[in-house]
Length: 305
Ligand SMILES: [Zn+2]
Ligand SMILES: [Zn+2]
Image (cartoon, rainbow, N blue to C red; front, side, top):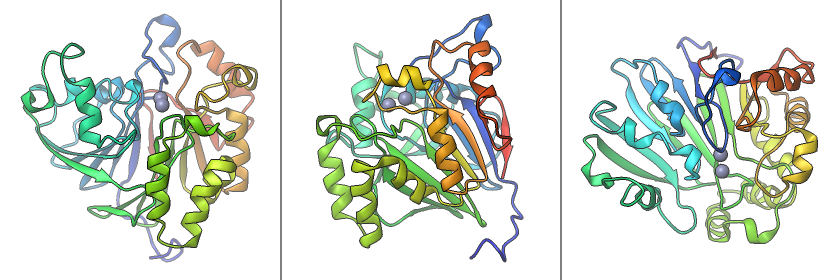
């Protein structure tokens, strides 16, 4: 159904549960933007789709009778740290966990490396939640979660990460946290995942997207995000910090601005704030955005689609 002849009759919202990158942080200098790590809740009338399970997942509001799904971008610790408390006796009773194979481990195997002794007292089987694991194939045909269509493509990030696009009733949201705008050296790629994604290319366009993601990542993401209603973009660094942190897999607000203009993105929120960036530091970074259509995400904010 095209956007032009569709009205969004659903109340689709995106809740920022946690937007800090790399490590959680707390204290009086971090109250405005928050210190919990990556977790976002995309909610329709029937679906509660959580994107990433950083410590922010513990800020989830009551989702009523909605079905709970969890999309994992990758298993770097800041994106899964909150999971054991969420699937324990005080958290969700039933959910599906979606994630791509990275470093030749399925999503279940990746979570197993964290949730076992000595890093955690019990393994996944000991948790009370009833969990259904779904292997995401990057670059394959989209997944359907109720009336939400989810497309997954590989990000430009060391060891691999998944960029998700969620479409529902004519609206689209792209989650591109943990993305670097410049080409990474080949030894930072998850080569097996890229080969798998390339072999799944359903047409020439998506095959080109993979090649482009490896050589010209910002152009690839711009093509993938074209006309999105909302883009979540990794702006961990200032341009000066980025020069010292190349190949770490993150980007800047300046590159977000280029992307949003070229991709005609309606609204952009900047995510994955560096742990050392205080409220006043982020306020200064925000002043440089110079656009009403882009801002630094704040823990607890809710955006309507
Ligand atoms: Zn991260
Ligand atoms: Zn990462």
